[in-house]
Length: 228
Image 1 (tube, rainbow, N blue to C red):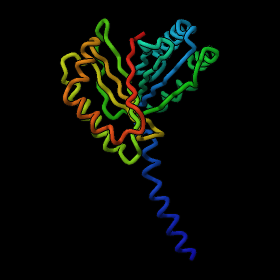
Image 2: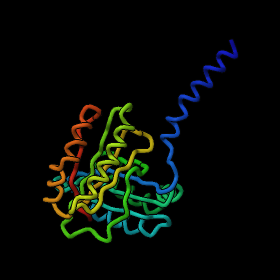
Image 3: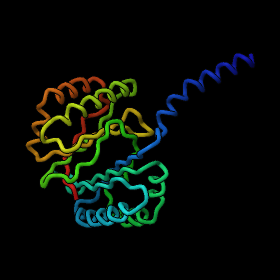
Image 4: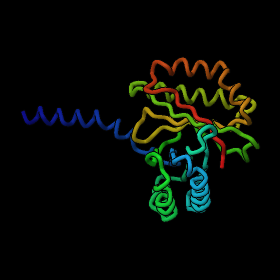
């Protein structure tokens, strides 16, 4: 009986192991996407605080990217996109004084919780030398049912390859959330709004969204931003 129970425990451990590994960073660059919403009257103050923490964070060891975006149609909503050389650098930033001071000052202004999502890159690209004046940023949260996460990852990689061939695409990346492997973040930079709208009408985008529909766990949440 004891032997049988031991076999069951071992089998259970083997079944759990892949899921645990999927949640752990694979090494290399560590990414973080953070969604912030403040009360509408505080959007100007929040933007100033975000610019300050971005300036400080870009000077920290291991920082590769610290982008602050403000939503176009709801200016009290922001997103922060970070890239660090490794998990150690990202954790040092999280525990650092610059971020702590920022969070303390932001707290009274918030309309919702500080939604921070550590991630791994699945379709990343070198940063452009500089974004075009008037460039449009699109950030999309893609949520699929857990059994479809691998299929979604393949689809996102293909969409990235197709999108980067479009003439006015300046950047396209996809990340997967560390602790929820069925949650993805898609980031795009387009030369202008017309370029973004043209992308939506392409065959590759239509095909991606059509296939995504049956596996979606939530609405396709695309939001447009400007860079601060």
